[in-house]
Image (cartoon, rainbow, N blue to C red; front, side, top):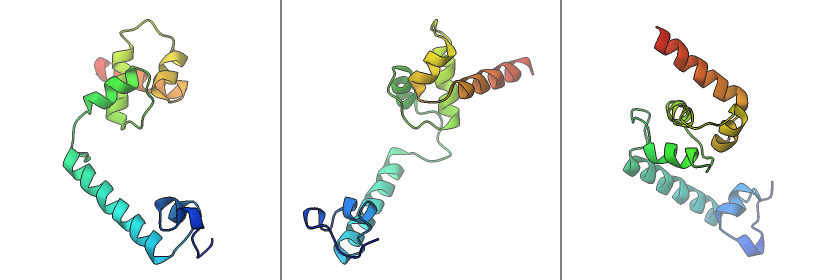
Length: 114
């Protein structure tokens, strides 16, 4: 790690995260980014207590792989079951492995059987 900024990225988040710069400007930029990110998460209601984010599920089903929480991934797999797709195609759409699709489907089958 370096302690000086690259002249082209001085004081940026990239200088902090990629270049390892720890100058006061880069550190403050990183802290400001973290504060803004946390405020946006709170404003959007993105907490563990929140239910399924339907927009994220719909985007993932449409083929835009994104980070989904397990409950959202289960909902996305359930939506994809309506389409005539193979497991590998479903996995590709959600950006997960084929095994993940199989696990979610098996869990849903076991839950319905109980």
